[in-house]
Image 1 (cartoon, rainbow, N blue to C red):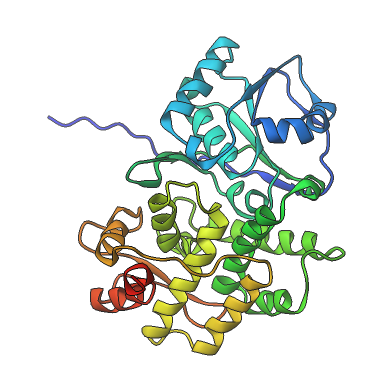
Image 2 (image 1 turned 135 degrees about the vertical axis):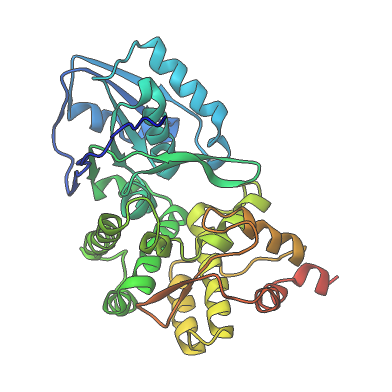
Length: 353
């Protein structure tokens, strides 16, 4: 005997992304704002002045990637229960990528899912992390290996929040902008080469172009079954670097910048990218003070860590490699010896010992 449960249906998870001054946000039910002490001290009053709700609660967690854990998620959920949120309540993720990822994940779990919105306050989260519904936390095996796809109800990108951003955080966000251009938009990359994002209205233009690019990719491949994986350019290497350094040495965007340089080296070795193109990418990243190299202590250990990447299978590693500037290839056909050859060029600790 066989029984069937017919769950075929169309779910519309569409939402709007607002770029510009933060408008009034209204909600009839309870609202919880997830943030950290740094963002709260700088910008919480701005958000509260534009928020209309009967009950508003603030949930504060420590600042830093090292707190992006299941323990912190449990703390957030406990506070949500303390405030007796229900399925009609709203969670606002107010901060950078760590806050956005954990706010989205917590809202996906609470009462089996409640609405949340993103109000990103860092350049990296405005151009990348806040858009697309990827949420989650890290564990000892790697970055974002525990999580869920849970789309926000809206994203509010206000560039004025970036006026207090430290130079390193700004550069980390630029790395994600460069990522979008290298993988999908050669003309945008050329524009980035000619213009300084620290001048005039250039930043808002770059944010808009980056968000348009990511939104288009997410529309085609929400659950990262194909095209969306291309947005992980630089991340396959970068995630290993972050895990090896226990998320304490580099900001996420800095690790991605190093990862893009490594991916470009592999692309050059595989004949997909010219050395001149790789140099152009490196020079653009250098313009914003991003790190471009990393000392690999153990090449084999670094290589084995690739197998924990979400895109890889048990015995096959998937790499995101640029095909020149403006195109990208998702491939699992790179031979191990070629990968290790590239990694060995970063094996400077033992070479210099």
